[in-house]
Each structure stands twice: as C-alpha cells, then as structure tokens.
Length: 404
Ligand SMILES: *Cc1c(COP(=O)(O)O)cnc(C)c1O
Image 1 (cartoon, rainbow, N blue to C red):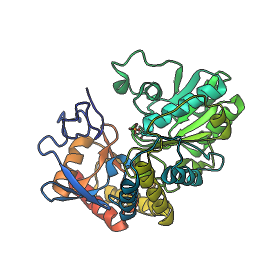
Image 2 (image 1 turned 180 degrees about the horizontal axis):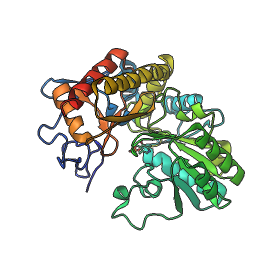
Image 3 (image 1 turned 180 degrees about the vertical axis):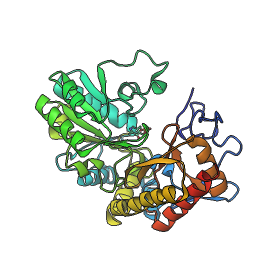
C-alpha cells in the first residue's frame, strides 16, 4: 500500500514519509532519521531528541491557529470532563455551537451544516446530496483534482496513482482541464448533478483558478440547475487571505466542504450547503457526526480564527513571504521557476526534486514543509506565523537551494 504525503500507511507502522521517491530516486524523506514528533507549540514542533522545528507544513493545513493553542486545549479538556460522546439525536451544547459557528463563517445561504469525520466524507456527503437533490447522475470534476480516497470521493480524484487497483470506481464523473472555462461550460448540461472544484488545487501542485473561471463555473451550474461544490478543505478557514478562497472571486457555491484544520487536527469534516441541497439530501448519516470533543476543538479554533483575524494575517504574511522568496530567487539566482498560490498556501516550483530539498530543510535547517508533486515545495504554515518566521524560512530555503 502506497501512501502520499505525510499520511500514515495502512499498517500505521512506517515512519512518516513525504513521497514515494523524488527525481533522484532517494526514497523516503526521513529514512535516515525519522522524526518522532512529541510536542508542539504554536508554529514549533519538538522531536523526541528535544530538537525544535519551525513548522511550515502545519501537517497539511491541520493547525491553522498553531499547535496546542491554549483555548483549543482548554475547550477539549473541559469537554472531556463533561462528556465524551452522546448520540447525535440528543442536542449537546458543543455540537449545537459547532453548527452555529460553522454557519456563521459560511458564506450567506450555506447555513445548513452536515458534520462528519474527514475531508473525504465531507465530499462524499456533497456528492450524495447533489445526486439526490437533482436526481441526476453526472458529475464534473477537474483534471489533477484531489477530493479524497473513499470510493465516492475517489471517483472525483483524478490522478491514476490514487485510483490504481481500486476498480470498479463509481462512474459518471467527467474530468475537464482545470482553468479552461470553455471546456467547463461544454461539460455542464442538464444531466449534471454537480461540479466539484478546488479554488486552488492543493495536492495537484498549488494551481489557483482565475476569478473568471470560478465565475463561469457559477454561471454554468446555475443555468443547468446543477450544484456547484467548492472543496475548500485545504483553501478554507482563512488560509488564502479570506475565510474562503471563493470569496475573492465573489462566487457563492451551493456547497462548501471543509475539514483539515477546522478542529485543529481532531477529526472533523463539514459540508455547508444551500437549502435546496439540504432539503433534497435524502438519507445520510454517521454515528460520530458532531462528536462533542471534536466540536469543542472546532468551536475554539473557529473563535480564535475570527477573533485574531488570522485570515488577514495570512494575507499580509503570505504576500510578504511570496515577495521575499521571489527577491531571494532573483538576487541569489536560486533554481526557482515560480511561486504560486495565495495567502499562506504557496507552492514554490523548483528546478529539482522537492523531496531532497525538504529533507535538507528539515534536517539541516529545522524547517518543516511539504511537497505538492515532485518539484513543488508547499508552504502551509499555521496562520499565526509572523514576518520573522517568513524571513527564517526564506533564509533556509536560500541556504538549501544554493547548495546545488
Ligand atoms: C486533504 C484533502 C481532502 C481529503 O481530506 P481527508 O481528511 O484526508 O479525507 C480532500 N480535498 C482536499 C482539497 C484536500 O486537501
């Protein structure tokens, strides 16, 4: 069983690794010295030997308010003392607050909230809601898209490496080139139940969609009576400089899916949708939906995000970081092709394998980052980072990339 990114393998016994092999065929990133992480505080992680790392990967955007944010930790402690779990048919304060808080941060019209346990489940739900509410079968998704790995979500995920070995994968999904408005218009018709898009493709290599592309998606789906679903599992919650990445295009979809950092890394996914999708959603459910402990973490995370205006910090520090990388690339002649993304979701496309660079960043610079494909260094730090942290990362990147 292969794994991507830093996710655990099926057996759960392998040390974390960042990709299969890089261009130099070097295999596991941390094979020489697996990092066993034992604690975290804000933007730093500490390993079993007491070494501190500046965390610019945030474990795939799972810690937007920083590691072990005191109010998240306190909220979890409090909830654990009160009650770990009760079935979802009994309202509980934590779950009710999570519905309200997610509804409050969702764009207008998307106040129907379904809670689950992961991103892939949030997309599964959106897929089912769209099929059921429209009575239609066809789904349109983008080439290079990543929407998760359960069978429904996998049917929307493009890369052969994620799909290999799992046939028959549910059919009915048409893939269109990401960013091609004309192709999207052509694909969406009156058989289409939904269009799924990431406003910025994450796993696919940090490729942002233009505002007009997202607007075209809105127009085409509205005309056809299909649902527009934005997968904001990586782009959402302030990461790109606004609470949701679709805001910059002025587009409100029919559903937004969230997960990753919404409960600071405790397992929570959410599907926020329009009335017509919620009303036609059919029967869907999950025993753990809205687990109180997880909801307590989400409530404190969302409060912190909003109160500390971390979307704004993501915009400011993100712009600064991008600019400094571009300046360093120019001045030091670094092997950098381009920097893509928005806010604190940046992909640095380099002229060499990303894994070796990531290993050197980790082991000799104590900076953790992520890959997004073979030649992209992905920066997704907690949204609490400062310009000083950004300077440190630019310095480390310069050091590693100028080694040749
Ligand atoms: C991570 C991710 C998913 C899948 O989320 P899981 O919690 O791993 O199931 C889906 N879509 C996007 C855009 C993601 O980044």
